[in-house]
Length: 215
Image 1 (tube, rainbow, N blue to C red):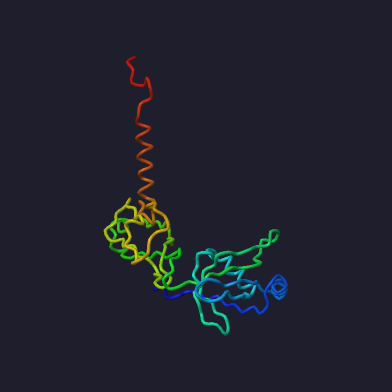
Image 2: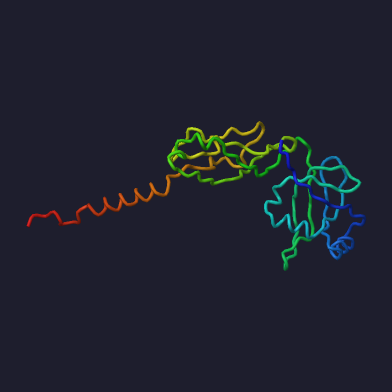
């Protein structure tokens, strides 16, 4: 279970309709609505600056939040829509969906690499190249893994780790059927340079057409 679900602070909005939404924006807030689950829709306001900061951090639409509203029980939500000003591209309204613990959602999960010291390729000077430090998985809202683990023990230079090589937590699966690459162990730069030089020498030694003709 993920230990750190970020909080999203909001306040209940007493008025509804366009007038209340415009007033919220004048007060430096972004109006929104929380819907879904077994509860009634809840109009909210979120501080503009705090919401903009979270939007700039990226992946807002695929992040699970713990919504905190004074006078309401905390609830897990995921954003389903952010409306923006067509000219300034700034948020003007937000829609949040309540999630049950059994809800299936797509989230980016951190990849943790272990046993680098037991990878022959790294012992030889190879370099671990991480292609995906996070992978997008479909997970259950009530059982979100904090990370997935890639065991590097036994991997040599040139070996590639695909998502199919990783044991995923129960109930989790990739959002795509493609067997994408997570990481690889590449040759050290010194070895690559030597190989490039060998290739250049070999190319120089190949006789040009007519060089071996009899005089």
